[in-house]
Length: 527
Image 1: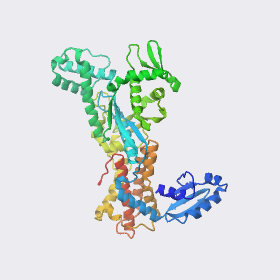
Image 2: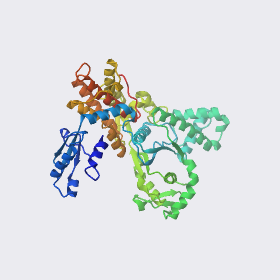
Image 3: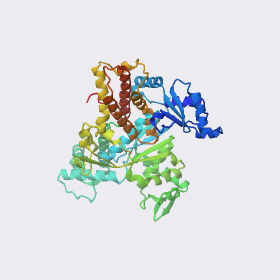
Image 4: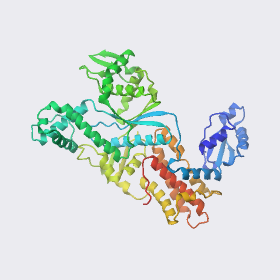
């Protein structure tokens, strides 16, 4: 619809066209500011706008075209809205699909495989998955990737924790260190390890490294199940940090060749301050071991070698200070760091009945994503996580999500769909039955509701452009509000306008279902 309007305007204005929302709803559906174009023609903006109106008024797509204050305002005709409604009813969940040329590598979640996914990981998972789904719907070629942090101290600590827990189960002497992983899941791993390897395996520390990799693999199985339960799209790639370390010598040599490294205090430092980092960073310790940053440098070198147009990383908000040093490394490696986009997801504060949500006994000291999914369901969790910008704190009470009123946005949107579905069921009709109904002489409320529903493709475009999936949930909440208002004010069945209103509502319901589907949420047919 928007593209159709732009195509018509381009026949008369040979320049980039910017469509805006008019300042007042009664002015029309779209507005084009003509100040720039009038200046190019050495004409008064108001006079130029009036000239253009004469050109555009001959098109059947427009009910009216008016010049108001240096703007050309377009009201779409009923026939144009009918055409778009038919497209929605025909395309259903594919409404708004398009094709883009950009190839994107999207990395998200990448939670350490040292424990089950907690609720903070779940926010990043759902946020990343929504961007993936919206982007793919719009036609972007997106590869999803999970970076497995299976090297470094945290994996060794996992092995040690399971080893000590096993010794405790076996009633062997245990000397617990100051730091170790706690929780029932460690005891579960220890019990499984005893069954698999036998008691003698835990008589000394010689097998801890092997045990660490075994435990890591078991935790990855748990994480993959958590991801599946969150209805996250299966990842295209799982990349092992440990496997990539075989490239470290080559990457370090490349950095040295580009004058990125210097030695000080028996350490190797990255000159990251040359690219706006607050201080230079250590990449190799005194004992010759690469730092955590070295792993990320190897990984981003591997990413950029693969030749994508854009790279998107979704990290926890606590990694904000990490962005500059990674981008500095990318520049030193000879790549364009502007191609890397880092998005941050804030933590979540969860309540139940107004009180803090209980920590999981199984996890020890955090809230498990799987517990919350079991409590409220994946669809509800996905929707509520996508109602706010990911880089802002999120707090909600799970008990509120069981309410059946407008205070519960998940219920509110689903109820709008279920209400429409109920009307059709009572009339023994389907949405497809309205395809042959011709829309004309639309009343103001009918036209406003239908036009708003048809905005889904543009909301998707904006949501992906700004990496803000909450624009889609907010659109659906607003569409639901307009639907409830229309339903409460206008009779549908056994009314002289029944057929037209059924087509409008069928279009609205199809858009709601499509919008939820794109976000990975299943619509409820009845409520």
